[in-house]
Picture 1 (cartoon, rainbow, N blue to C red):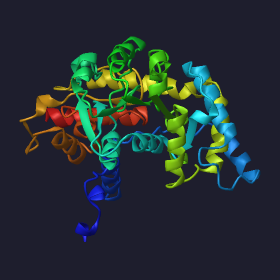
Picture 2: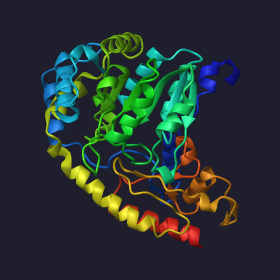
Picture 3: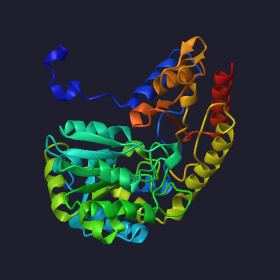
Length: 396
């Protein structure tokens, strides 16, 4: 009956990260000792002060439908957070709260993109960007960077990708999957290109903002001439270890925020009331309240880096943020390991899963076809064991 489904859904790929994680769970259920480095989910429990705020909201009987765009008190807290952490001044009317940052990204794309419009993806990119663009029946235009560019696109590449149909640029810093962070100067150079093309908007995904190791990341909207053309997207999941609570938000020009509220009102309506109340407490807390998690991620990053650079055939950068490595493993393309010919990153990722019992994600899903992504959002012990398994797999 597949032919009775819409072309839209038949053309939509499964999320590679979620698919690999599901495969890892299946193998575990079959008794395999799988170490899962495929999923981007902090392994910490939520901070107690956020849990206490959620319990308080339940006890105060917050259980009713919420405003589509989010509680005013939360939108005010988001405005204060953006001013404090990012130097961005927004009014609550410019903020929309959604069921996760993914919905915020989709809302922004759907209100800006028409069929045939082009959306530029700064590769490597998060897997869902391309799917969201396809759902809008727009055209994804991938601008590749690689390990030699530290996985960041150059202004001349951006300029070459722009056509009269270009409407949106998706950019993500700190980056999933590479951990790269664009500097203020690098963003300024990209903005100098965009200034010449006033009808292009930037969707800036800043969900990993607080998980950074080289200083505070710079928000694209903080460039004065880009403020009115940027949709800043963020959320709670990564920094506060509440991935299942599902709360994201955007800050944008008011006319875009109103359009996103209209869109959301016909799809999900307002986000979960308990999570919204807890989010007020989370966003008003100083960054120091979650510094212990950031410090642990930094320690894991350093451990994994030292181990990865000792794996034959692996080339890797030192991430500046998020909790991923994106090693280039193209050395193995065309080689035979354990009776398997490795033609691409997907073959290599499957080899690691089925021979080394380590789940990773092929870089093909991220616009990085020479790479695989490894998440270090798990314990030090498991990370050390996983890299040792990988090393043994490629050496034997």
